Image (cartoon, rainbow, N blue to C red; front, side):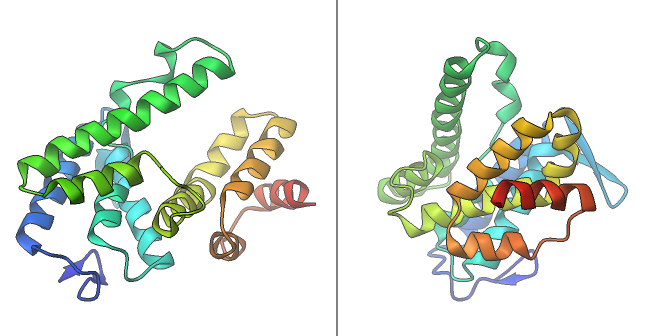
Length: 207
């Protein structure tokens, strides 16, 4: 089958109709994001746009990505706007609690959709494990997902984010981002087209 320009004939999709149905429900959920972004003249939910970018990077990094990895990628930030950072205390402890709760929230929302579409418990558990980023570094598919998340940040979010972040903090964020990535992720990141100021920050972070 074809999926956003990619041939998934080697991706071991067990049931194409079920897979498409699950993706459609995930996309419908993310399309409701009140935060909008313009894509080719069309206003769409930001999380829908983000999920499209994430899956695209996953397939660039791992052409034979499993059905479970594709589902986890598409749903990684499902309905994220419903749990905003401002609902948690300021500071690192509040931030870490927010992030931990988000992963559980995304995994649960995704599991509900997959169960509705008739996925078996084993497949649902695997997608949940990826959503929760269990065994990062040891699980190759989980690492691919982490690489893709970092690449979406660097390619689509970094330029805007650095404008509201002081230089020292931004350099620290870039170093942490780089530390999360594999060698394949690093190679892809170094191939990204960046503005002069963004490139200077990356060079400083990697020095």
